[in-house]
Length: 419
Image 1 (cartoon, helix red, strand yellow):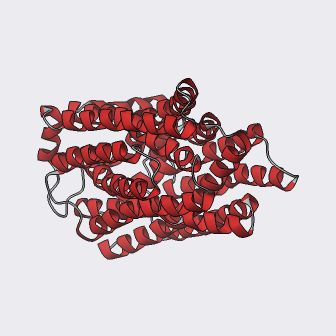
Image 2 (spheres, one colour; image 1 turned 135 degrees about the vertical axis):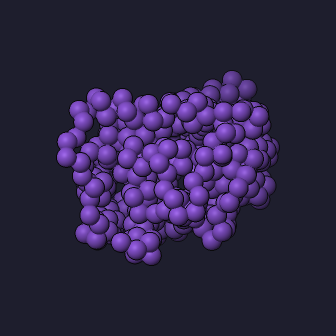
Image 3 (cartoon, one colour; image 1 turned 135 degrees about the horizontal axis):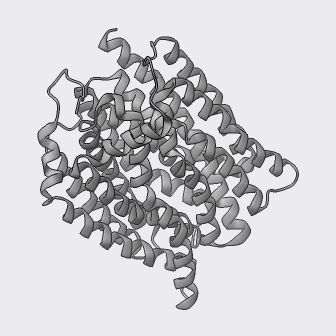
């Protein structure tokens, strides 16, 4: 099967995820505004985000094993289609007159449980479809799809909320699930699923996945370091909304989030066209350091223009960091272990988000109350401290020898990873 055909299939798969990302962003924005208006608490907003994320994290490892044992595209279709159940539950509660915080938490948890099937299968499918020299370009495009929930969804949701309410956002999100499933189904029809004569036992497969991410010290260390960094970055992502909503309305929030996220679009477009050819570790370190500085600027004062500039810079750095992390890890893991390996990688690298989502809101509310600053300035203080720590960690990555050695194992053009 030609490389061009496979890349076209990747584009179709990517298009489905792009639309799904917009739908998910509408729901995320709408629920965030709804909960904050009902409770005025950063902690409650963080709780909803945590429950929308935690099941996906906890189930990522077994989902990775399933991605190597069964049809990856079918798993993606099941995950996408069934995750609509949780959103339907929230919509039903809204149609009855309003959803309580408990009902929202139940809905996002159910949706996240099914969504856990997606990420390892999607990551492994990219490896199935593309050659090594296409990974960087594909990673940039995946970042564009991911940025849609921050770039397009907030301003669209802000406008829609002026003419309707959160129920419309939920309905639109549910509709996107169907389109995504159809795109994945078309890609699946054109591929021959790789099978093995005998599947290894489940727990043996788990052990092999763990070995794949730990046998090279540099890979494992990079994953652990990224977990610490996601903690600081997660604090920024969860507290940006209550910070702005404390002195502006939801329309301004939507416009502000879109302006900030446009930084991700710009850099993702650059990566999608040109990619990164060398110096992955240096680019990773520099981009995360700049992101930390942007976080400090973001929290300095209640000025929406300064916030937008800092947010733009922060989001512009994320695709570069994600691209480098993805490439360094992907090219150092064998193709046949990609699914289960990405399950472990997703679990380990994103533990930091759980810590951030669990503590950031509590810290912001606590600081605001203790010093009588309000929840917005409490959130700003947490974001600024997180920025300082992120910058320190980013600079600490570069000198580590075992991590630097990962660049020496990059496959030549036309080769797939067989590490």
